[in-house]
Every structure is written in structure tokens, then in C-alpha cells.
Image (cartoon, rainbow, N blue to C red; front, side, top):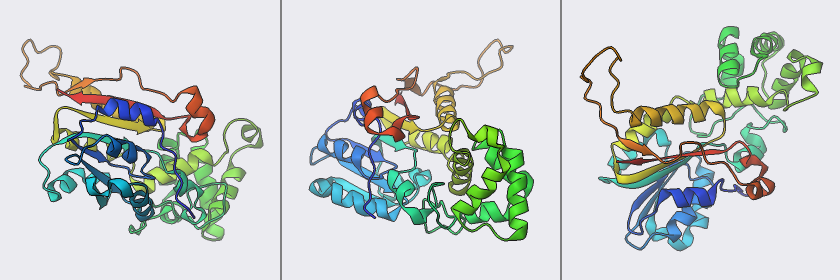
Length: 311
């Protein structure tokens, strides 16, 4: 299948990166290279883009898209959680900006065998990096009822988490749940019919929760932001696109922690923590997609962009 992925909040990201033509920038979630292409267009021959993606098909597509700028690009097949190590491996002292698009790519959703979609039957997978062994199959068939409930409630924010976990356990006692539609069937049995008539597909939140668990998506966000801060030039910017409230909350609070210049208890009369403010928050409220973008790309509907600048 051809790798198709529309870059979300494209103009807003490029504008907020404040690209210097001879700067060094990182696209930590290369995807279909839509953002990367616009970054490259603004770089001189002295500029450099580091394109990171753990999906090898994304890397292959990006090389096609960026073929006219290939001399400016270094491709890295890795997870952006390893950002500090990646920068060190490439012998880079400082960078001028980074972009992270935390959404699942359109290609991953559309490629049936990846198992991300609750609308197509496929083996339970959901691995963004297919080199890793742990998959959705392990979560669904090996987690305890309590662990399943926790994943579905915490990461999927599904109010039927307890009941869904119970029904999944019951189904797998008969036989292993091996495909996406077998999982969807168990979920539909668990969610009362009255709750399935309105709102999103009953499996949407469950699949989100399992996908986040498989790829450890939330636990790495704050770490990456802090690791990048150590390598960011003064006035360098971090632009992060999130797609659900859990991600957005982590980005917001991590920025706030970096913005605060004292974390001493209020009752302490003199600051003794020596913490210094590290960033300026550019987006007091997140930037949302325009009406025009939403009409062209419905997958942008929950996107939010938050930007900060190192001081």
C-alpha cells in the first residue's frame, strides 16, 4: 500500500519553528515527510534536518518525498525517545528546533495488516516499530483483568473499562483473541446497546488505550522534552502536536514545569531550590486546525499544537 499521510497543522508548525536557513532541525516523527519537506525548503545548503521514525515504511516514503533535498537530510530509524543518544551519535552539539507529531499516521491506520484500525479485520498488532516483539496481542491475551481495565480506563478514557475488561477475559477463556474484529466483537458485547447508538464507535477508545500501551506513547513525552532542552540553542523552539487530552496535558504540564522559576514550598520565605526558568511559552492556549483544514482532513479534528522557546 502507498504511504499516504497528510501533515497536520502544517503552516502553523512551520511558522512557529522560526526556521533559520543554516539551522539544525529535527522532525522526530517523520511520517510522510510533509512537515519535513517544508522545513527543507527553508534551509540553505548549510542547514540540516534530522528525520526520525521507527516505521521503516515511513522512512522509505520520506526519502522519496525529500529526494530534491537529500543532501540536507539525515535519516534515523529509531524512536524519538532516544533523542539524546541520537543527537550524540550524530556528533551534533546543539539544535535549533524540533517538531513532534504524536498522532498515528494515516498510513498506519489504513494499512490493514498493522492492526491499528477497529474497522478492518487484521491480526492484533498495533506496533509502530515492527522490530519490537510486544504487541496488542500480548496486552489483550496476557494482561490480567485489572491490568486491562487500567489500560482501557487510563489511556482510552473509556467509562465502560471495567465491563469491557471482564468481557475480554471471558472471551479469551474460550479461545485467544487473535484479530481486531474478534476484539471488537468482545467490546460490543460489553457496551450496552443504548450506549452504542450515539457517539464514537464503541471500540475507538479501547483501541486507543491498547495502542498507547503497546508503544509506551505517554511515558516518553516529558522525558523527550527535557532531553531536547539540554541540546536546544537559545531561542530554539519545540513544537508538539497532540491528538488526545492525555498527551496534551503532559505537554502542557511539562512546559509549565520548565517555565516555573521556583518550586520551593510557599511557606519557605527565601528560594533555596535554585531552579531557573528555561522557556517562554509561545502558545498560552493550543493552536487548533482551521475550518478549511478540518474540511480537507477529518483526522486533524482533535489536533492541538503547543510551542515553547528556550530562553
